Amino acid sequence: MIYPSIDKLLNIVDSKYKLVHVTSQRSKQMLENNHYQMRENEYTAKKPIGRALEELEKGLIKIKED
Image (cartoon, rainbow, N blue to C red; front, side, top):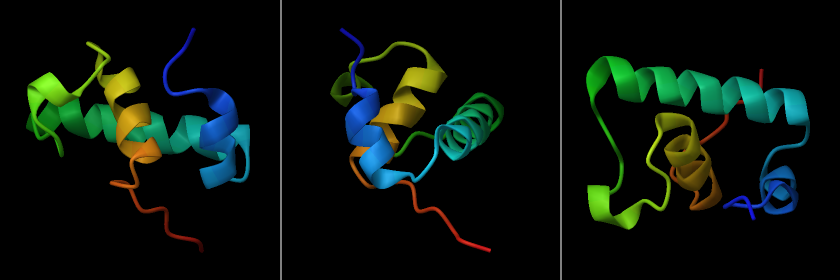
């Protein structure tokens, strides 16, 4: 099973496309800056894209509406 589930994430973000866009941007920031919002041992995922999804689920990523 994928963690966090897509159903939970779509309650936070209104479309799949925005979900992909936000998590890809955040994972690129993680790779470029080596900055994480949680401790290493708090993440379930090993890769930046999964870690970005976890941060989104925990409310650590705020999405600005245009």
